[in-house]
Length: 201
Image (cartoon, rainbow, N blue to C red; front, top):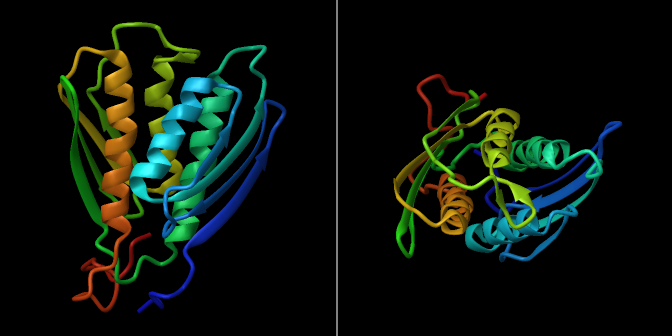
């Protein structure tokens, strides 16, 4: 069984011709966030993710925003997913599964997570505007897809209600935070990994 006092942190850097990214993540933090991606609304979403998951998160990205936001948002998803996977370690003693239905005024978003070591992404969340602030709404799906595959997790979103696009986006990030926090918490009744295979990878 993994040592429950072990620090579950990761620092991941990734540099390509399109982006230069550094992400620091502490799964057992207090919700402190610093996000500087050059996309204000995206930074706001990352802040909500960190605060409501009680993760300490530092994200710095220099991307080719002169082209568009695609590479920046997708690549941050890749690096954040890698940080989640590394920080979670061998996953011994954790709950593995997490789900949360998060309300935000007229919006209700359900997020479910399985840290199973197998990537899969599903979402029926719908946006009715092309942008929220300076973030393209089509990049919401690309970001979470990148996180799920890089972290090797099942990640599902279901939009129960919602009409305000800002609320839909914010509820999605916060629901993901709460579900991930639940999935990474320790279950005292487990002595190994919660799998009949004996491994979550």
